[in-house]
Every structure is written in C-alpha cells, then in structure tokens.
Length: 354
Image (cartoon, rainbow, N blue to C red; front, side, top):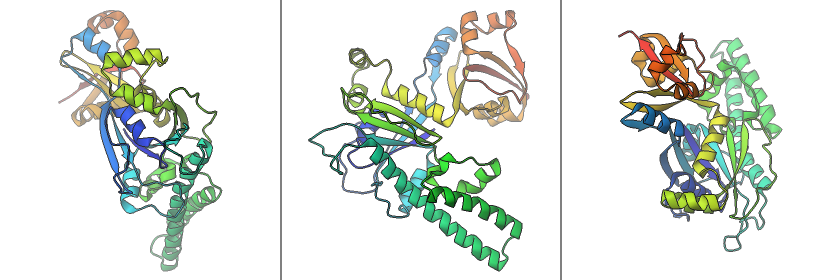
C-alpha cells in the first residue's frame, strides 16, 4: 500500500511523515519545489506476534506500507501539475492531506490565519483544476477522433458520455472520488492520471494540547483523522519503552502509525489474512471481497495455478483452540473453494497441486 502525504506549505506535512515512519527528514525545504521523502514501514499487528509465539515461528513478516512525503502542491489552482509531480501522485493508492489545525506564532500560516476547512478546500481545488484540464483535453481529442472516423462511433460515444459526466462533476466542484464507476469505466480511466479519483485521508495536524476541530468529510471515499503531529514525531523517535510511558501520560492508546494505518485500511477497503507455521507467521493485505484464489495468488502464483482447496479458520478461533491439530480435532477447519470470500482475520493454508 502506497500513501502520498500532501499538504500546503507550513502544514506540518514532514513532521507527520516523521511521526508515521520514525524518520528524521528535515522539516525545512531545501529550496526545490518538488521534493520527496519516502519510507517503508511495517504495519503494527499484534496478531502476527501472537501467532508467532503460539506456533514457534522463526520469522515474523508484517504487512508493509510506503509513505511518500511529496512537496509541490501550493493550494494555488494554476492548471496542470508538473509531470514528475503528477506521475508520483498517480502511483499512490490514496492521498493523505495533512491540514494545519495548530497555531504557532513562530511558524506563521502563509494565509495569515489557521482555517482547516479553507485549506482543505484549497488543495482539493488545485487537484480538481488539474483533472478538469485533463478531461477537457480528452473531450477535444474524442471530437477529433469522431471527425476522422478513427474508431467505431459507438466506442467514441460511450467514452464521450463518461468524460462529459466527469466534466460536469468537476465543473460543479465535486472530486471524482464522489462518483461511482463500473469496472469497465475504471479500466478506461486508469491511464489518465485523474488525481481526484483517489481516496483521500484528511489528517488534521493539531497542537499538543488541542482538541480536534469539528470538520467532517465532505465527499465519499474521504476520511478525517486528527493527529498531534509534533508530539507524535517526538514519540516515534524515542526508545519504545519511553514512548509508551509518555503516550500513556497523554492518554494516547495507540501510535500515530497504528491510527493512520487503520483509517487507511478502512478507506481503501483492505483486509488482512494470515499464514502461519514453524518457519514464518505472516500478514497478507488484500482488497475487501477478494477470493481464496486471490489470496493464493498473493502468496505465490504457483499456489493459484495449482489451487485445490483452502483450509480456513478465523484467528480468534484458532487461538482459542490452540493449534491446527486441536482445530482439526474439533472440526473447526473449513475447506473452501476458490470463490470463497476471504474475511479479515482468516488464517489460511492453501492446498495445491504441483
């Protein structure tokens, strides 16, 4: 899972990046408008730890998430974004918009006042205008193709109707993530780099002692989470025992990474299934609604190619019973076919033919 952190200048975006990844990226720009910091982190998962302890697994492998701290957005809707910035944003599974919700006289807000709703709308508008120009250019190209007879008229008409729907939404100030698309339309749009189609996690960066402002998600496929960015950055760079102590002092029950990952999984409709044995206990992320065959393919293509059945039990049930042998003796291991919809927390053993 790749998540791109974006935000207006002085929003504390890099502070949040350091809080999530434990990095020490410099908090001031080097002078380049387009600057990127990246880090790959393990997704904290106590279920992996518990499985490894129970089964004596020699290795623990957690799901991974890549965070990219991406500079270059300004909130000034000036047209299409530069190519390198557009391409990098296009690679992300979702965008994390860091919105300033803290007051600090030593770091004045570029607009003079702190207004999270205004800043959220400004960056949305910058992305929206980029998409609008992309859609308008495509509509012009479709008109040319129709005149030249380059493709069947039915194909052009179908695509034009889709892009006219996109244009109407963008003209009305509505990001494309608010629209529903068929699988065929999703495939058609995949190559156009339409950034407002991406799910958006709005991360309110509040002060150490602040309460989060009342700001709700204005569109579908958008979530709002509050985070004490500076405090969480300091905690992420501490010794784990010291961090746990201070987290308790501030009444924080989980780390910034745990909170943001959970919101991201919810936003992107991801689940986690597990495999476990003496060699390894491992977490595997999947899109919600994936099948046992999809799970087998995630593990290895050979398992999907020779798939016979999946042995399935939920993590909670397996841990309560003790191990695979006890679960089999209790008749709790289910044999599922390739069309079985994997559930979050399922522990799988794939039977396959070589």
